[in-house]
Image (cartoon, rainbow, N blue to C red; front, side):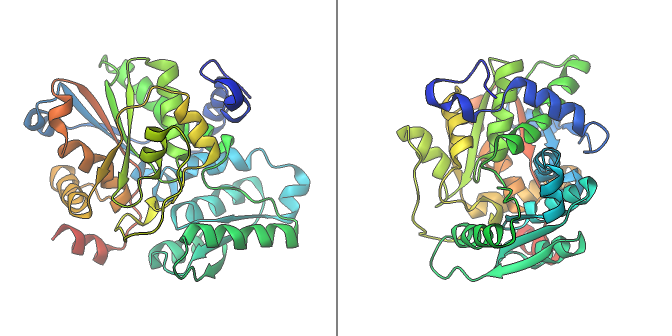
Amino acid sequence: MTTEHSKGKTKELIPSYRDIDNAIAALRGVAVETPLIEVPELANELKLNSLHFKLESMQRTGSFKFRGAYWRCMQLRPDEKNNGVVAFSSGNFAQALPVAASLVGTSTKIVMPIDAPLLKKKRAEKFGAEIILTDHGNEGREVVAEKKAKQISEQENRPLLHPFDDSHMIAGNSTAAVEIVETLKMRNYPLPDHVYCCSGGGGLISGIAIAFARYSSKTRVIPVEPEGFDSTGQSLNTGKATTLQITKNSICDALQALKPGKVPFACLSSLNMGRPIVVLDNQVREAMSLAYELRRIILEPAGAAPLAALINNANLVRNKDIVVIASGANIQPQDFVSHIR
């Protein structure tokens, strides 16, 4: 499972182009080929050559997570399907996995932080998952949830499917970038100079970056993280995976990993990435409001973070072709209204 862009000890960790091609074939007709919309009025305002939004917010279960979840579930052996799977998630993977698992004929247990958004907990149950809640206190919410998921995996002999630290998850997520490339080529648009993408544990951005390294060597993928949770940016800057301490909260509940996954970081550190950007909560709220104002697009905070990064740093990319990944839309209506007021 290696490919041309891998180096040294990271070789065995990085999804191969063949793995990505297989994921593309498997997801055709199963995942939504989400819209890639042009936003010329904002491009003009920001002095860009072109601007497109990739609306993964319109993917099955409301986020990009379905892509990786389905491709990972396709790898399960018959005996693993019989036992069912277990995972941990702050919300979006918790919704995507039970849907993906049901399509391959298996069941799901999900460990979620007790303070995960109510909508995400309810929807995960609606989609068929059995939910176990964990109280993380002052510890990292995903750290505690992962410990519990590992315990269940060992006790019940269920495969533990990691939401981002998994090469198959990354390969599945990369298909969003392949769609961007295909659509832009079909429309005779230039491929992007920069792609703005959020990063939590790194499962989405590593897939996006691998795909663009394959199809568009000029493209730089820019990691976007909330203030206080910029583990990917700090890790790329220092050259080694960095674990953060919890110092503050963020409205971006889906982007609160304190350390990038081993596999995503191996991918990202092997590629030429754009300069990481940290966004503030108020900037994210403004981006949520702007997306709604421009196209009536509803985004959760994590889904709006890349747009926030662009509009607050547009002077760095003047006259460039830009794509913004809008990764998810799982937010309660009253919370959305509260954020955009």
